[in-house]
Image (cartoon, rainbow, N blue to C red):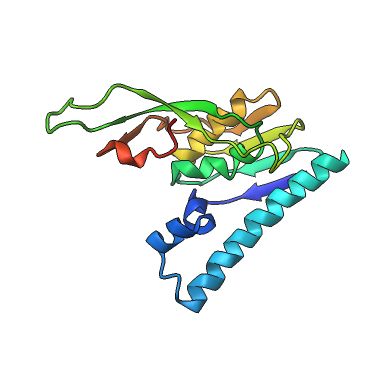
Length: 178
């Protein structure tokens, strides 16, 4: 069984070079080493899941999101998007502010989780369990919804606070929509 625990969804900032430049001073050697360390941890997790799955010895995947305060929506690609078949998966709705009025929001727009191309991975058929508690928020809740929608997915934990509809000041935040 492969276990992955993390406290926030900020992998995009580490895994994609342009995002890293936006969030960090990547010319600093200490920062660069930290980024490479985060990349190495995710790569080891992903490769272990894939190797065990292909060998037929994967007993399951546990994603521990207890105390995870959420973060970047695009991180879904690196977690559940690396377990699902290619093609994307609808997971929640978003709306953004369109004016200065109290109720000036867009209509709800369906969000899709981008998944890895099938030539990069095999989708997982073994059990996938997500663990949450009352401090699992935002993207942790969305990840829970995605895992629960999987035929092989299970959720263990307490009820979350229910923050699954994203709000933003403009539509540019939702780069993962098709």
